[in-house]
Length: 155
Image (tube, rainbow, N blue to C red; front, side, top):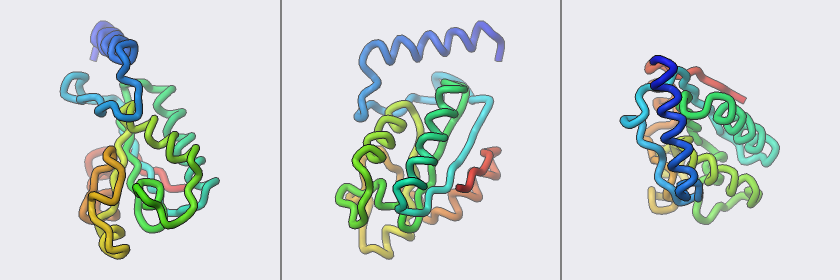
């Protein structure tokens, strides 16, 4: 990608955000419009601990600030971490962490919810927040994303 394409993509994103696409209910940015990012990263989030969750969300936010539209970020949520994405969490998840996750999703960060974890809790896709994508098996999701060139970050 040349510098002109990169500037055009950044201008396009700035225009979208200026038009109000920064709310937590905004649809993720369509990668087909922007092309393939130079950087791809997947985080594993598997604990319900507030400090742990905040650390991952902060890191993802910093990566987004650093690379802007030139990074694709996925946070695969498995095990007890699934409560971050629950409409009605059964474990205490700080409101700030839930708000930060929604904000990151509005900026294009993808949240993948482990279907196996949902099954073990007797939950379905309707029990997780709308911005989450349910994947069959979280571990499989991590593996497949790495096979697609995503850097794996474990906390």
